[in-house]
Length: 388
Ligand SMILES: Cc1cc2nc3c(=O)[nH]c(=O)nc-3n(C[C@H](O)[C@H](O)[C@H](O)COP(=O)(O)OP(=O)(O)OC[C@H]3O[C@@H](n4cnc5c(N)ncnc54)[C@H](O)[C@@H]3O)c2cc1C
Image (tube, rainbow, N blue to C red; front, side, top):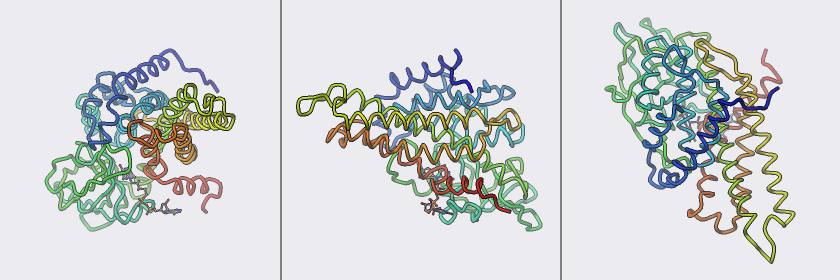
């Protein structure tokens, strides 16, 4: 196993770190306070070639490996979690599923939107009564002679109302009324019958809306179907989500790394009862534990990304067990690391004048969104005790 970055990866890391420090850090509080989407950061990322890095060459992208995207996400998240999340969603998630399983026309158009317009595809799976138990979803896409009619409600959809491209999970019902299981349908923002409902007032990562999507007899062309495969369709779509889990873990890691670095700097200068914080052994050990957590988290994420297998069109898919182990571990350890880092600042850490409290609110999300820690543990347990 090789832990050395090649020259191209070193350049990528340096670029992402510089953009994070010079362009994104100072404005991170603004997106949080105003619940504002960072359109201007998206344009910086786009111009720097950091959107659509995984898009296959056949559709105009650079087809970079998953580990390269992970490296970028980690750097940017040190400075702005919201902007790092946009890098996840413009490289993985719905985009990966479409690049692997969509039709050539869908792939070409969605790739163009990401690379040229900076569109961040959204993925609509969760419903009010179908979260962890996703197979309970009730949204339907009924086939007619000239399109699919979609009815149902999704909630907590990241980028709802911002994303032009929306990959919606629905039960595919054919013209004879037969249920073909869960498949994916593309619905563009602005399609009649597609409305944005309640937008959540979320605890963290407030720069991207988490919205309700309401479909009322919303008609899309037959060509918008991404997968209709009673046996394998849902499994393929869900597996496609493994990459998103690895990307989300990299955001959590970056947030924790950023908080840890702030704490270490502070410990080098702040004095209490006549000595620097770093000279209190109890505090130095907390920093040492933070270092261990970060290293272990990084190794699990990199392993999952480097071991990813190739789907159609060279889309890279991490293995489920490795993605779940990374997400469950990193979600928890990153939260602990940010919380410990905040503690070093005393009262100042609890103030919105420093970024620590925002980072703590942001990092908490990664134990819930993209599948809860318990859902990941269920998947890991299933790999130990397979079902007959
Ligand atoms: C910030 C954010 C962004 C999100 N973005 C998206 C998005 O873009 N698209 C999308 O489709 N969804 C999105 N979600 C939704 C997210 O995927 C779900 O919230 C998550 O899957 C959990 O579902 P739930 O909220 O319905 O909780 P529930 O499934 O109701 O779970 C409640 C609790 O019970 C536990 N639990 C449930 N079932 C089991 C079980 N079988 N075994 C053990 N414990 C269990 C859970 O771990 C949790 O602690 C987002 C959520 C958040 C917070």
